[in-house]
Length: 420
Ligand code: SAH
Ligand code: SF4
Image (cartoon, rainbow, N blue to C red; front, top):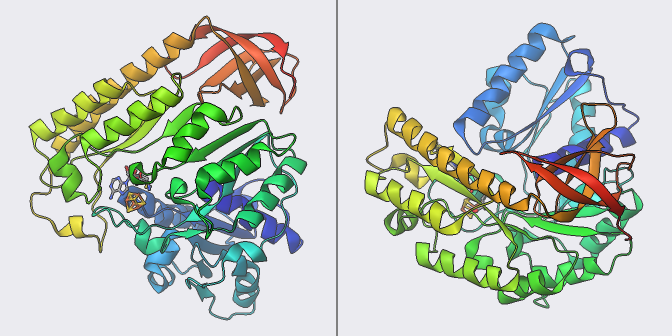
């Protein structure tokens, strides 16, 4: 979502006549779009600001994103930046930059009722795989998470605005659209269309070849969406469905509102609808009070599912969240060791999933040039990176036989161009 927001801010500034600098060191204005989800991401902002001040040409600095939202004026005090703008107010960036240039205070962390999206320019030029935010915010309040505080309450963008933006993206060069939301499968409207209804509308857009969506919450995995995986050919066989832990006690303490078992049952239904679906998830190790046995439950869940790829994190206490004040915070060494074990297991599963693709022929969407002459890089339906030598162009969809599977990517040979 930060990639999407960054693109939209760049479009806004371009509409003001600004052009992109070659690098941060030569820029007159630097917009840092920030993440507050874990402490490390937050601290990075301050080191980046320090580096810009030291090596850049003392640019105007705007801090956007969730660190801006959470820390507000504190950033101005700590790092003397020129503009602070929250994730729901970035349509005001041009005005804030103008205010700062005129020596006025420029801070906007409002969460207005009218959404920012209406104030953003139309999409003009995008790559073959584009993002489209359809839902923002979260009402679920997992006890470790800052998102409900930094992104605000759960809001769905209107159906018509999304379909319009999707068409504009396709006109601007997109062949694949990934629908985005903190809980994207909670997207809905007054008619109860649901994410599957939105996907059905996008399915009808000529020129669009692939649809994806991320991130989903287990509790919002409705029957219609599961069925869409069986019925909508453009919907790619990939589901990112974070579980966080395999222990019911930990899930309850996290306020996750799904259990190990209910999660596994959802995956069974998804696999029944789309047997080749690639599964993905997020995990947190070292949540306060997590015992060895509870961590083992996470490892056994990973084995039970057989994920294609995952993200895994050490628990990071976030100021203002309930878990930050819980007893039994886990020692750093224990978290390190657990993360290593979990990642070793996830890597094994990913390698096995990739190995199972070897020998198959599948459509690959070419996204960019590779490092070697004539080499191109694309994505399989299961979101694996595929390298190949081809004269196909960026945006082409070609049939590729997978001839080699490595732990992190595949190599293939072109078979045919796919009509789309
Ligand atoms: N809404 C999605 C996740 C969005 S946040 C969901 O609930 O599934 C992305 C991921 O960051 C989460 O899935 C979680 O694994 C991780 N995360 C969030 N807060 C964290 C924290 N305090 N420490 C470590 N990881 C965290
Ligand atoms: Fe954070 Fe996701 Fe939980 Fe919402 S559902 S609080 S975004 S982890």
